[in-house]
Length: 188
Image 1 (cartoon, helix red, strand yellow):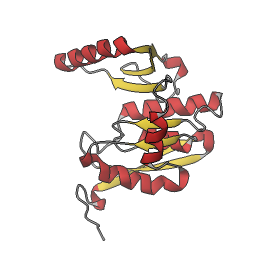
Image 2 (cartoon, one colour):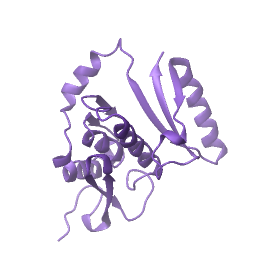
Image 3 (cartoon, one colour):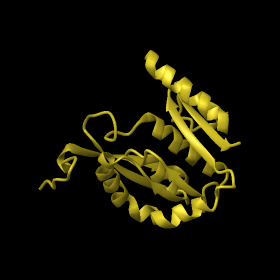
Image 4 (cartoon, helix red, strand yellow):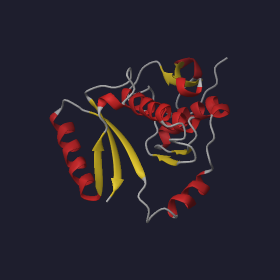
């Protein structure tokens, strides 16, 4: 029996399992059979999720108690991984992405702890004078317009933030790529 939602039918989806080896848990992420935005697991999300896992292998409490606000969560791979590894996570995205994101949160909620949005926003409001750490992944694109947009974005970013490129050798051995940037960003 297929349940109809506003954006997809369950029979149009398939689960992808993502192992988080450091804590012996597996996320089940539903994605569409085909598509581009907000419907399939992006390589860049795997790179960042596996980087967080790698950091937790080196320092077990790397994410423990950390508050994370993920903007543009997509299917939720990064945020769900961070929550599974001990972070208090709020996942956000555009309205059209929320049904599939909510399904993935629901499917994995027994493995994670997600604080209510209000509590997280109150905590974020209290950290304005602090310098939170932001991780950003960006797959380098080939088109001229995408290159130009990235260059403009990166230049504006450097006006307000210190940016450190995470070297590939510090990333997960099987989830890294020379065409995917992993950046650590801290407010100046």
